[in-house]
Each structure stands twice: as C-alpha cells, then as structure tokens.
Length: 385
Image 1 (cartoon, one colour):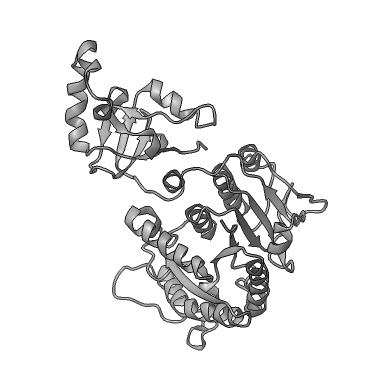
Image 2 (cartoon, rainbow, N blue to C red; image 1 turned 180 degrees about the horizontal axis):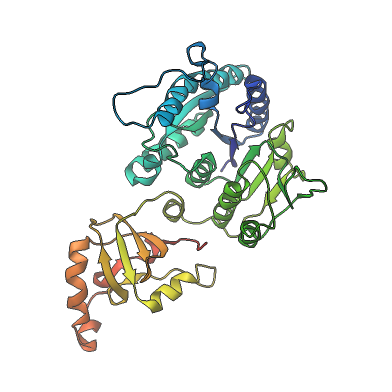
C-alpha cells in the first residue's frame, strides 16, 4: 500500500493578513508534493487562505465594504463568508495552475464539521477522497466558510487537518506554518531554542498551559492536534512553510522543525472516527463509578476497552436510535468515550430495570448480546485534558 502524507498549510504561510506572494508559496508546495508523488506517495493537502485570498477582489478592497443585512445576522461573520466565497475559487485556481505545470490534477474538497460528524456523510467524503487518490488526483481540503453555521465551524484548520489525516489513515501529518517549529519559549525572545522532538505531548501541553512555554502562530492548537493524532498511530511534524522542499526533506529523515513520534500503532478506522470527528452531544450514557474508573485508564496493548453493559449504566440522557453515536460520561458529565449504541434510548430505558431485577441465575441465561449497550469494537476512549 502506498504511503500517505497529509500536509496542512496555514494562512500565515500563504501571505497572511499582510498579503504576500501566495502563488509562489503554492508553487513551492506543489513542487514538493510532485516530488513525493513521483516517488509513489499519495498526498492530501489541507489548505487555509480562502478568506485572505478574497481580500484581493477589487470590490472588497474597502475595509468598510457594506455588509448590511435586514436581520440580526452577525455582520463580521457575513464579511468573512463573503470574502471566503470570493477567495475559494481564486485560491483553487492557483493550485490548479501550479499542479498543471507538473502534469497533475487536483480537486477541491470543501467541508464543514457536520460532514465529518455524520457517519453517512463522513463515509461519502472518505470514499470520494480514496477515489481521487486512486486516480492520482490531489485532494485540496478547506473548510467551507460560506456554509459554516458558526464563525468557527472547525475550531481551526489544524482540527480539519487532524480529522482528514485520521480519515485517510495517513502515515504522517505535516503542518507547515510561519515558525520553524516548537520553541522552549516565544521564538521572538532572545535565546529561544527550537525543540526538535517531543515524545510526551500531554506533559508538554501541561507545562505550556501553565505558562512555562509560550509561542506564536496558534501553537497550542497544533500541540493539541499532535496529542490526538500521535495517539492514533500517525506521526506528525511542524515545520516552516518557507523551507524549500520541506515535505520531501522530512520524509527523507532530515531533522527539520519539531517532530512528534506516534505513541501507538494505527488503530481501527471506526475508532479513529469516533475519537476525532463523531458528534454525540446530548446523547449520553452515564456509567457507574467503577466502569468510569476503568475508562479513565484509557486503552493500551495490555488493556483493551470494555463493552458497556446494562449492569454498568446509571442513566440514559437524551434520545437516540440504534447505531447512533453516544457519549459515555461519568456522574458529573465528563466525557470518557464515544461509541455506537446497539439499541435505542427508549429500548435501553426499558431493558436496564428489567435486567437489574433478574436473579443471578436468571441473568446467566440471558444472551451476552442482549446486555451490551455499546460493544468494545464500537467504543473509543476520549483523551482526558
């Protein structure tokens, strides 16, 4: 199977709010991708930059261009959506022109958070992406800001990069940004030292949030992405987008930027989806203290996730149907995992008191399949902050 690389390039690299030669940056990235593709790699791009590219439109050059609307619609959000609507085709045109120079086709994939959260839409998105890669077409992912119901549908494109890398079962995620990597303090401070490798992202994040490590360029978001993606068996790198052939050099083993080794083997694609993308808000199974403690320990090669049995359920919250995504929570509402329910909420509410009223002898006669609310194969742990 061919090696797959997911690469995310940020707005700051593509010119940022100050403007810049976006085309030359994209040309460099495309050359890098082309080099890897000639060596047999498959590459998916997660690209920011639509809003900033939209600022170049003549009609929108006035910073006070009219975004009035008769409703109470957020004017600042509307402005961003208008800029994105103008910028998306302009940005994609740059990718098309540069890829054509290398005889490669590319495709635009505009997504919203809902596309990843809903299982049916997620599978459609995955199958389309797989089809593009199979035909040597480079998918260029971007958030569909025009249709996003909130200002930040994804919290940022780092989150989109995480979800995309997990969806395609990438062999590596590379984030190209406007800094050389992660530093031991702000890179603007004298004496700041680049950290070449971080093996324990959780510990580093704890120190970061305590104020011991500070950086620029949304580094906390990137660290959070690294924590999750490496737990899924996908190594990650943060490097400067200004470096020539950064992708190729990283793949060839050069110590460029900051690397984050994978902390586990690649897991099941369903569990990867549950961890990164699935949404179960409002649909919850509250488990006993004993089961909650087991779930808090997480999964390891020696300790697999348990199934959620009727006897371990304290409460059913919200309404859901069979195979809906549900959150597994403790008695104070902390999310411990996400899974696919084997039954509807109404059915579980009937089954639980029935099962608890049985004697030990009667319970022994009940089929195991009839007392499982969420099977271990359909359950993924949620990493605790």
